[in-house]
Length: 124
Length: 139
Image (cartoon, rainbow over all chains, first blue to last red; front, side, top):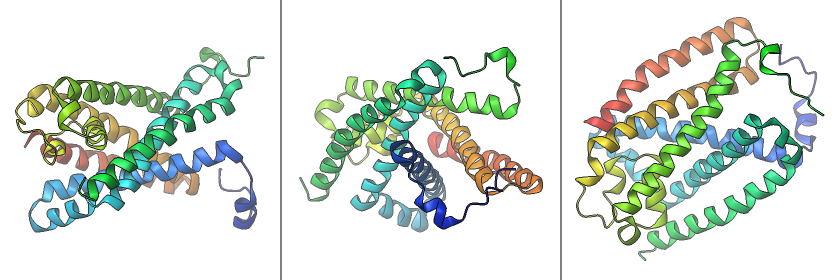
């Protein structure tokens, strides 16, 4: 079974998996963030009224939008990389380059979105 | 060197099928997101929406996502075509997300009973959240 690794948390934190591990961690955080956000968003839309409106105030704040845009865009772009590499296995040879391409796409796209969100929040 | 086994030498169990489903549903969601973005641009998003709003609409083509933009006439944005694609995108994303939760739980829950409970709860979540989401889209 999966859990008997005999590795302490401290050792685990010292593991240096570089870019693939970074994308794995961010993919997992992003996925969980999307599940929490979408789940509560649907429930607050469904409930409506005072309580639902309280939820919408949170979702429409620019800080929350910056976080959830990170989760959604990173999960989407990293997911496309995983899908392409998994469905065409010979490409796994180029996985490091694929991660660099992924960040070359993600960072400009995300920065433009953050710029637009802050610009809109400041009343532009 | 070919390190992957050919398909007929691999066991094809539920987990393998869900592994494949996760990848294929990702491609399916990409198709829906692209369709939402292209549709929004055809409907006039270029002058009426900013990029963040366009992405919000593309990730879920639901009318409430264009209410705070400069789009005045919402009728085109709430027709059955978009409601059906929003429903399909929602069901695809829900199955993808709930399976993702099961995978995450499996990393921390190793016992057979615990994993059975996780799978039972995942089915409960899908049965409850599926109709709720569809009602939000259609009501």
